[in-house]
Image 1 (cartoon, rainbow, N blue to C red):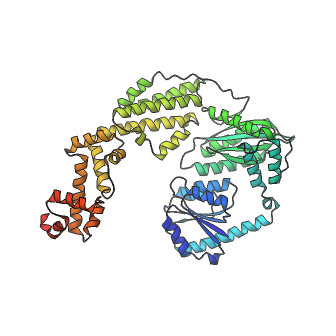
Image 2 (cartoon, rainbow, N blue to C red):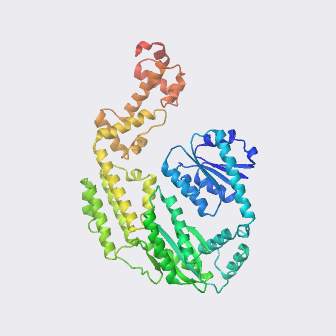
Image 3 (cartoon, rainbow, N blue to C red):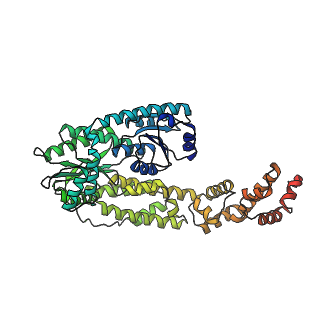
Length: 522
């Protein structure tokens, strides 16, 4: 029996490993991971029976990690822990069939008991597996690996396909035909995407099973998409499949307030799976305006849509004049008009994305603002990555960049606000190396421009202000504490003690030791 502990804080992981008696639980190996990505590596390379994971972690959350575990066909018994009593967390944990859910900090004795219960659950699952030929043969995993190798192109020739079939214990025929489908979910909210995908999967399985359509495999594809493979038996009906999809998409919209598209190709022999996948992926990438639609290759016609944005100069003037609401409304209206005319596709919005960002860079540069630094957070990266998936995603991206640029232009127009933020940064980072560039970076401004702005507002250069704050803090520490002088120098940002002493004497007329002895110097 093996357990995996996942938490971004190493102190938490070490505390659990030191405090719990794993031997008494029959746990042989304890693996540690500080991120969901590291946890996935362990889960793929080790047999993990039980996982205890934090929910709040940088990047992917514990909920995202469990979704991956479920989607990967793993039956790891999972316990969630969290620092927040959040009902939504508890609800999602329940929906995803987690074994247990508890709040930090948890008493180690209580955690020992919960792990003991998890061990019993893992043993029960192992027992069920051992009595099931289906699980014993590993058929679902073998099918998934087989079809993934065909979709990715790792296996292409008929000879290699036969070898892979034999390796996986499968027995498809060269005469068999398959339905390859690419399911593309749209407009998932960041905080609910994981549980919505899980719920969507359950709805899909239930509806397609009602029509006796059970996929051979469901293979995850980049971008939260899924490729499903159905074998076309004698009673297979493309019309029934399309009807079931429309029922499925309707339920997804009704129950989850989400949308989903399906792109598919029927009558695929094994040797053409890779090509068919690339074909449906190509039309799915081009299509940015559909909602709950189903297309086959012959249904969807790609078009060469000319791109021209004559009003970009007018939009630039709107941004310069602070009319962010008007600019957002106009960009959205333009996209809607293009979509209504059937003249909007992925290449079009990609070209528009480039023009809009170039325009914003130009405007920000005029205001001495670094667009590169301003748009360097995770939210921007996520919105940009999704912007080419759909019309609504593109609108979200455009609104974000326009409002972010406009809001920061308004902020920097108040020089006192900028100077206040720089002063706050200096005061809280005195022990660190602080440069003009690092100060400019936190307010997203050109460093020369910031220096001029600071001098104009305070009458003092950035360097002089920084030095004054460091000496002021050193004087406080000399009088109020018994910390050694060389340590005080380091605390206020001076690695060179001699230079600190020289600067201190230059500013106060006495050495640091003399200042400490004669408190009346204050």
